[in-house]
Image (cartoon, rainbow, N blue to C red; front, side, top):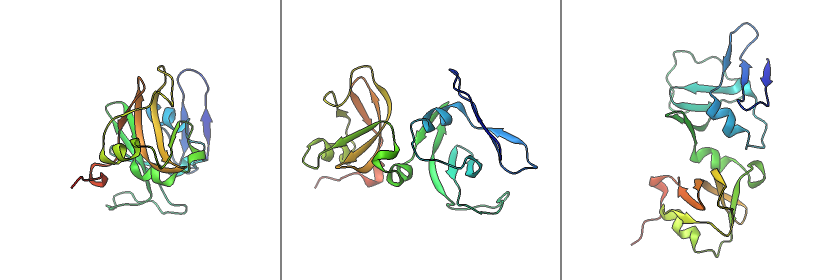
Length: 166
């Protein structure tokens, strides 16, 4: 297995799946996102199927041509030249394993708003120049991701999981 990472403006992550296979290059959007993840991923276990990016179980045989419902951890999706992290990844990370974290107190009213799928004002957590993906936590436990821009957090909590008012 070979892996090379350059620290220039344009990041390049090259992986070799097995000794006799060709090297493949991961999209820049994915490598840029993975810079914020403090967990070590074995790059040979990253698999792209269509728009979906998976982290495959260790020792899994080749699955070329095999259809599967779910195999491994869905890291996220590549959409229109950007990477969107998955809810599964958010739930799998610990607060300490991601660079950009918004950790709310359980008493903060914004938690209910987040669970309902609303956009949050977070000027008390970040400066106006910060942007990108943030892991939203409650007392250190992850809930999901949000995309920050101009002190507003665009909610990426799964629609099917959202709190329904009665």
